[in-house]
Amino acid sequence: MFVARFRTIDVSHELRFAAWHEMTSKALISTAVTSDSVDDFAATVSVLDLGAVQISTVAYPPLRATRTARLIRGSDPDLYYVTMPLRGKLGVSHADREADVDSGHFVVIDTSRPGVVANREPVEHLIVQVPRSELPKSRALSAVVARPLPVDKGMGSLMVNVARQLMRSADEYRPADGKRLTSVVIDLVAFTLAGHLDENGAARDAGQRLLKPRILDFIEKRLSDPALSPSAVAAAHNISVRYLHLLFRDQGLTVAGWIRERRLDRCRRDLRDAELSGRPVHAIGAHWGFPDATAFSRAFKQAFGIPPGDYRRQHVES
Image (cartoon, rainbow, N blue to C red; front, top):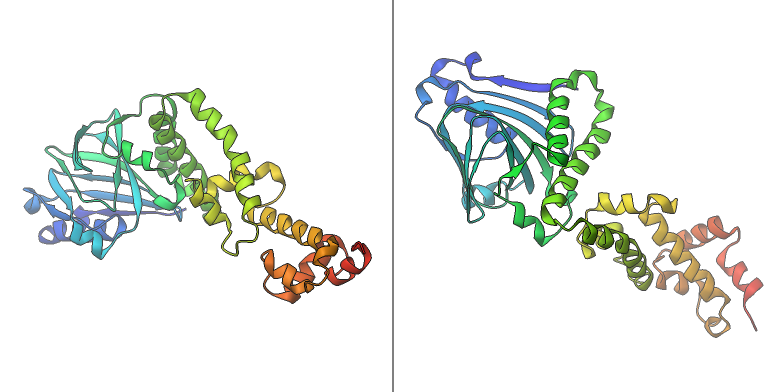
């Protein structure tokens, strides 16, 4: 895989600051930047694009980068930045919080909210960009934004080590590995943040054990809802679609496949019901989420080996 690199030393002296600002605005996020080192701006940027996730290392002299509401309106990638100083210290003013973040900590920045990141000395930091949609949709997540969180142990240490290793050994991976590596990074970020959201591990584990039954019950009660989908199920339970699919690994079906199977079972039940014998076959299919009669007949036959009309004639109780 390819790591894109940019060094201001490769640009004409008078263009270095402007070139760096333009490059980082495109590769990272748009900010308004000021610096006392414009006349001698020595900076580097390295970017590893895995697809949904991007990992970067950035080094630069003292500056102040401001993410304004106007810039957000113009460009909001809807990301969380997990930022870890490797050298130096970052001052963060964000989400009504003030924080100093050193090399023993990381900080989460919400690109959809205004803020300022500044440094009084040269700094180098690692950035992991993760789409908001890939993390649990929980209000509690705002509790970790702009708070220094330790990276010297546990999941935080593992997250940083994996991100740094990916940057160092990117050329050992193929482009096809990007999707798998993205999953690894997202899971590490999600698990690391979860550890800081709830210190009561037993309560969290119990909640996770109860989540699957709640989801199955939710699906069962809404099978007739045409809007029922994996994304709707995930949103209703404040989890990402990715995590929802992980929960369903032991079902032997995807989430969409489970919904489809349960809907077909409901259709089969109704087709056996003598009280519903006057309802057209296609209407039963439409009621349970199969608006296209031909597609319903094909799906039913594939599942049960017989078209729905024939099934009714064989099984309805007179």
